[in-house]
Image 1 (spheres, rainbow, N blue to C red):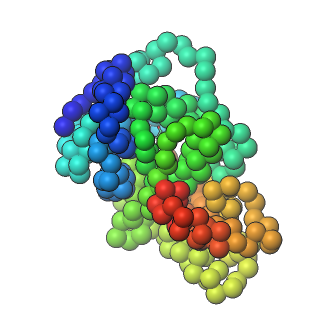
Image 2 (tube, rainbow, N blue to C red):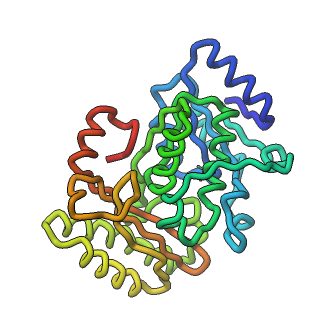
Length: 298
Ligand code: PAF
């Protein structure tokens, strides 16, 4: 497997792959790979070349967030990506990515201000800016994201649509630990007791989804869900909300055919976890039939 650190070299490699007719899939990551990331590599298996980037992007972390303590292990990541079928790992330095004192950024308005965006000011601007840079460097035909970061996926879909980026966005389902906890590079930072209790988050989401299917009003279920999360020892709830997906608008009764995203963020000590479930609406099911796997993981 090839490792490329230099931006110009990556661009030249991507250009020659394109010229030789290869279809390039891109899996952008911040490293410390787990089964969730590796499932994104699986989801790209129909492409000729799979490029995984490993870059802990400083501009998507706010002051006081966990940029310094974010887990890193490049050699392990490279071995895991190779073992799963990636062809190239691109791992630029922060100096090469941002050394030139950039004055340019990419910002998706409004849908970046709700859910995680409400407390993480500037986070999504960091994400969309680094992804635009990475897309120009890796030149992929397809880019794969995880449904775990549902808001990020929705923001990327909107950016690609708004800016006419010629890239198919593929969104792969959440991969969970055996007790239901959504896989995240941050899980390793949970204290043992918190790790056990964190499994309650997905149980609460699944509970809401299942009882909603029996016709209970969503507002009441969300209120009960918030109360249940507040009772988890060590947990501090940031939000538990339902929105249309991928539009991320507040739900109205007339949107009964919208896909519904039920998403949460909660902290255990310094570790912030997110999770979600998606309930496909009529329009979502139709969308999925038209382009299975290319838009969302319903
Ligand atoms: O999901 C992530 O790991 C990051 O937000 C991404 C997409 C790699 C951009 O830095």
